[in-house]
Length: 593
View 1 (cartoon, rainbow, N blue to C red):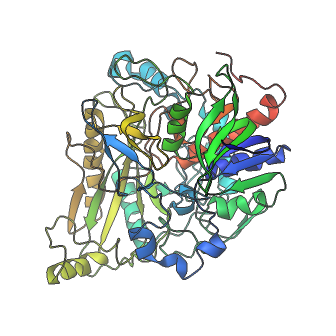
View 2 (tube, rainbow, N blue to C red):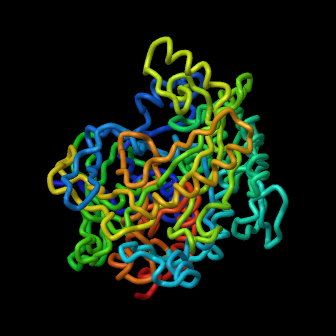
View 3 (cartoon, helix red, strand yellow):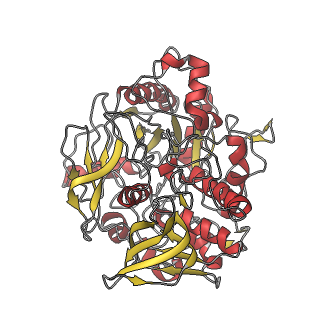
């Protein structure tokens, strides 16, 4: 029989970015908030002090901050007729674990959507006509506009001490920033990070070709900053240990460096680690959540009653919990009915490798998580798609992440080199100082046959079905990246290189889950305007169970060419405001179906 705990006002499943934000906002409103985190407590001071933090073997190779896939993972297949198999080694994406989640080990790329991306179907139908969108492409509007979210983007950036330069400030185009961005109400909290030598070359080449480069927005502070919660954030020292690592400089924004120092001290907030939530409990009507059930560190089943249930875990975990709990109708790709699991998407990435003449010295070990140069001329609908025959685009950026000896010391691009020995050493030595990559983060549209469901065969350590991912690349994305790579090749050539080597998969190839691409998985609990086309409304509130709210990138109806954290955090603050100002006064649906 399950142990039953005392009731709380709010129970949250997961304590990463969205859990930390919602915990902060709702404790401030006077509610008692409990966060249930399945992983360990993680703290910058004790878990990642220098030099412990810069152990490449431990963190980049062995994945010390990642989920234990032997206990719980996902299964993956390409098509409906395939049999899914378990994802047993971290490859294509990296599932975080513990307090802070993926927000503890991310790089800090902090973008806002381009306005048209939030009204995807409406924008494209109005500009190109309804027939331009393929029949099997199930893209839709988010149900919320850029203008509505702008104040929450702004606040998120201030919480994270984001560095950058405004390009569209209160409707005025500002030199030095991104002229294609949506209108901003304020400048970035901290100035742009300094360009490394390679970024300066790329910026000039982009400009010479006719594009509009700008300093990439980075949740890596460029100078000391005190955020709205009173937390002090230090300046980045360009150590080159960001992705896969905690930040010992307190410069990279994470829940630990921006929110938790205040939240953890609040008397009406509690976090329980090693607490794996297995179900959201519903009353007899199935229309109201009564709390959650979790497995504690001793393997005991515990019932936690609550008035509000917030799913604040990673995208895949939130969708799986909805399916396990029977909240919403599961999506059926054959009939097109149901919504939970619908519109699963990823990102379609590539790059241009530029090899400069011998004697060039980039010093790649001087690195940041997100500082560099970017451009949006080939992103979203910033260019005419009519004659090209595809939808979507990519954010383009050059960032020097570092020059670490194990994972970042590659051989010369385009050469067939042995994986060890004297030839390998010579190639690494030749490539290290004179190569650079211009990356392309490509959007991926939603399709009828790309979705999430419970696996009929495989189960986790607690005996529950694993989440099954069904996805493969489509012709639209292949056309998109092929075109963008051809344009970016011109940027590479403008640098007067020795050689330019494209790193773009062949159109028609399948998703290779063995190779890291991004941890930007989206969809499955999508937002929208009606219960028929979405799982949650514009405030991330469940249409079916109004005292359940679902956060994170699972709410995205399709994927964009940006990193998701900016939109994820803006949506969380937008939801928090609605809960505080509307829901608490009159609990129930915030949007009438």
